[in-house]
Image 1 (spheres, rainbow, N blue to C red):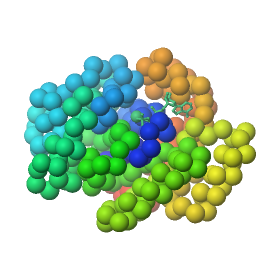
Image 2 (spheres, rainbow, N blue to C red; image 1 turned 120 degrees about the vertical axis):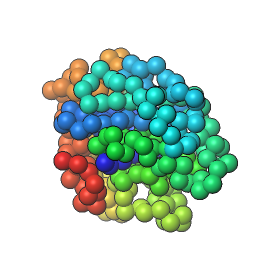
Image 3 (cartoon, rainbow, N blue to C red; image 1 turned 180 degrees about the vertical axis):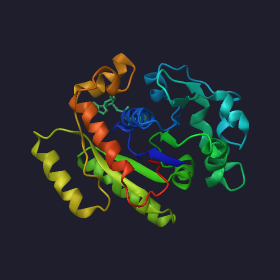
Image 4 (cartoon, rainbow, N blue to C red; image 1 turned 180 degrees about the horizontal axis):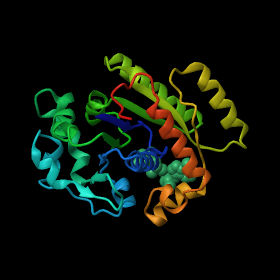
Length: 253
Ligand SMILES: Nc1ncnc2c1ncn2[C@@H]1O[C@H](COP(=O)(O)OP(=O)(O)OP(=O)(O)O)[C@@H](O)[C@H]1O
Ligand SMILES: [Mg+2]
């Protein structure tokens, strides 16, 4: 079992778009996959046409309990389940702060799911709080989308510094560029610079493409309604690269 988080401390960078498409591709390859929507906004939940809401509210992600299975919903796709968002997820960090070993609560809560799925894919909110520390503790591979702008790169630097300062294993963090417009000189230059100054920048970039935006209209991964599109090809390339990552020996397949 491998846990992969789509995480960034910056909002609106393409975390949810990647989480939805990578979860779909993992399941399509035959691996049993659970997408966990940790963001109270519920965007992944929306894309999969599932009603938000977990049983017994945030306790499902606070305590280790088999009851977490009661909240899981099937999606329209084989091998792909969803743990939906819940409005109470906005308070998860406060719930964790009140408990022992506060940075290990999410790992504990997800424990019963580990033997049930090949992949847990976490769609994370853009915060760098105690929930984020729980995410760092529990993930095998943290995928961080970066838009090629100075502010998005600054946020990534802040993330790497935070991980170093707090003793998290930054080697598991892989950045990839998102919403790239190859016609823009600024994008090309910033990507080239970042490849020199940051370790672990994936080769695959996700271009800025209308089919990704249209996921909100179709409420489906791009592979479902535009399988032959460049957007679908970009996420397939990203998934292929993630599966080959050297320091993620637990990735199945
Ligand atoms: N490659 C892309 N091309 C075009 N639009 C994109 C692309 N990726 C994401 N978008 C659009 O940008 C917006 C933000 O994307 P998304 O919701 O995936 O970001 P996020 O990082 O999950 O945001 P948040 O921090 O709010 O959770 C959405 O409207 C989405 O449709
Ligand atoms: Mg999101």
